[in-house]
Length: 335
Image (cartoon, rainbow, N blue to C red; front, side):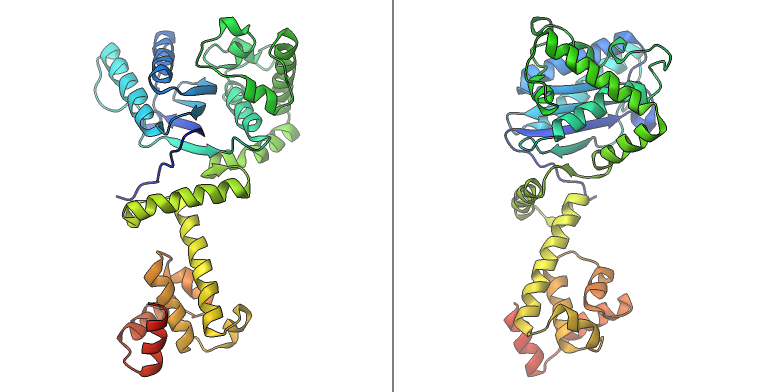
């Protein structure tokens, strides 16, 4: 079964989110929460990970994690596997604790704004989940988040928690009592925004890419990820991977291929609509894209204006079987 690729490299930053199996609880009480955080501390010690933000809730958790070494997969296997063993032993259960594959959204660590956006999303989770009372509740009162640790002196925080990049990304350049007070003012203010209709709508718009995308960052960051993905796909069977990153990669490659094919055949993109749906050069382009990418017949038909998707399959088959000199020459040109 095809799976989403895990892009790993030294210094990669991820927004990690994992839910309980069948959306069930991954922690039953404070003892479970403590044991989960012990596993986080251990995995950071084993892998060298740096946690910039985290929040543990009843049936899922979030983390903004940096991997100085390219070891996300190995670390996550240890973290979730070890916690599962300890949870099941304590509660005398068997089976999975976590649901399928965890989400690991790649975050642009070199551009401004992304650390602040993701960490705010993570730290506001208790308020979003209704675990903080609107009347007098404060985010610092929720103990299973890194936010209360941000408000402590550096000597009182665990060594695996890094705060400087998050603080710096929202414009706080000092980690003293003034900086901690500034961060508290900032985050409690965002919490109040969350509790207004207009503010929540704005925050949800800001967080849309965190929930639905495969990366969070600039176009340059996306292109660098695509280059890394290309190397992965060359080393493994392309059809063994799936997911938005691969689909984006495939479509980008198909568009480049189409552009080169149009240029070689002397056709402008704007002229495709005027050509007959079964025009031989169109069929050659369809054959070229199908041969070198995994794009669907629907996508090919839409790009080349070839009508019903069944036409695409028939036209490609005709190109493959054709013996006339013109088609054979074009086919050889793109072989």
